[in-house]
Length: 79
Image (cartoon, rainbow, N blue to C red):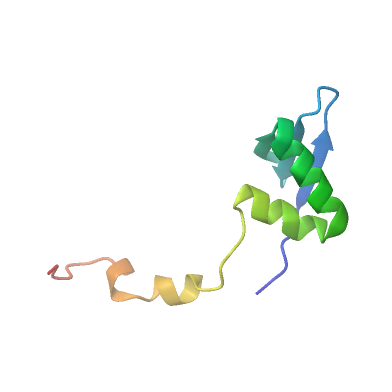
């Protein structure tokens, strides 16, 4: 599974943290959540932490799910 990349974050004057992915806003954190994020990003891999906080990360099962009969489309009988 590839490592997350393309995330950046900006701490604004009012204490708000804006997380962007590929130049698009992915999350805005305020108050206690912003403080918790900043504490966590200092202690770990920043890209992985930002991916987790935004929910923009892959689980590794996308290819398997794409090939499942339920997700292929077409006329599949439902039970």
